[in-house]
Length: 117
Image (cartoon, rainbow, N blue to C red; front, side, top):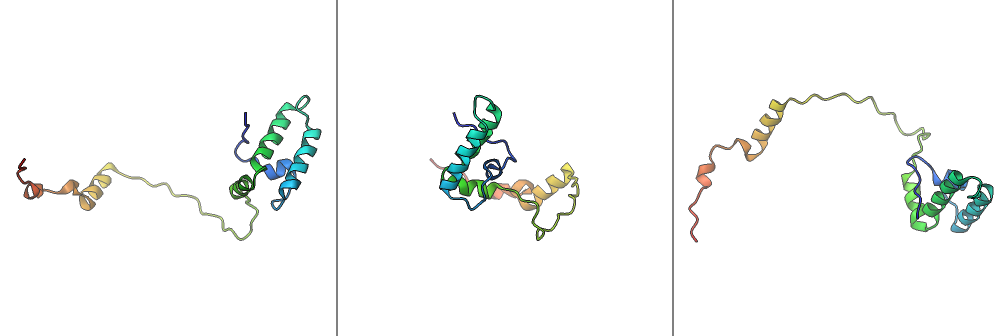
């Protein structure tokens, strides 16, 4: 049964490998961690190590894990301003629906035609 990592856990950090690690390096790091955290003595740590390895053991999995990383230490990323709450009134929604859809049409009888079977 495959164990998945909780959100926010970095498989690269768990296995202590760089982002550019090859499959052989990932496998070596996995076996080092398994020796460090054997399932008989450290079951929870072993599960985390196993889940990290299962996520990184294929090239596609490694790409997916790299894409899901969140690194907030990048100085080039500007900080977003706090979000302003928006208040929407039901009357405003109806007014917009009438203006931009057929909800407010009153000339629908012009489109009525008798159906001939």
